Amino acid sequence: QRADRLDASRLTVQKRTMTSHPAPAHRGLLLSFEGIDGSGKSTQISLLTHALRQRGHSVSVYREPGGTPLSEKIRDLLLDPAYEPDPVTEILLFSAARSELAARRILPDLEAGHVVILDRFFDSTTAYQGYGNGVLGEQALESIHRLAAHALVPGITFYLRIPIQHALRRLAAQEKDRIESKDEAFFSRVVEGYEQLARRHRRFIPLDALAPVEQIHGEILSHATRLLTSA
Image (cartoon, rainbow, N blue to C red; front, side, top):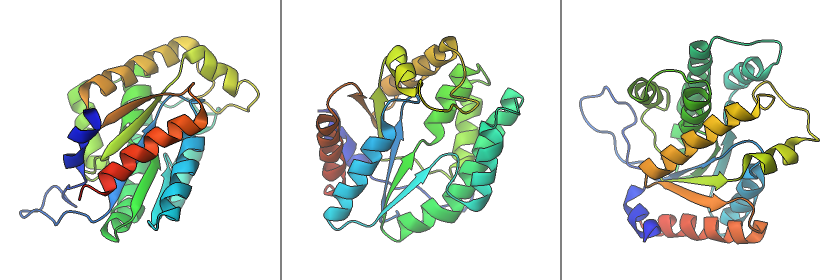
């Protein structure tokens, strides 16, 4: 089964990619949540965080872009409707915020044995900026991601699938930032990006975002618990 194949994917990356000797494997676990805006990521992250803490795990939760003072300032620039950065500039700004978060928060937390949960990681940049904006090729993006993420890769990426119209209806009553305000054609390309990633990477766990909240949570908790107990 798909989840069984993920048992070997517990985080074992090097802390830095340019050292001559591999760094020890981190003791913690990195999990990420992906999906278009309005897919219910925040709800599921909150439920998973509570459940894992109830089971005695130390859990850190960060959003992208953000998570450090500098990354939050970059977030403000990226989401401000007053600015429309060049598409390549946009990728590099997201990546700069990611590098700061990885170096200042994620790596230390993993080394301390925490479960780190991310509301978006580099897969969002591939889907939104790569596919949505049609910028750069796959190889160039992967090189940028590896550098900016300090070679970190999630053990599991929970991908919440939702039809675009449902997501847009969920967002209708909210004040939208610059990216949330983009048109349906943009989000169609983003969804195609996520679907391509889900087909390509075994760490992706696609979930029906229209299923009952507790049912989705149960699936997520089952996968996360299996990976935590596989070490």
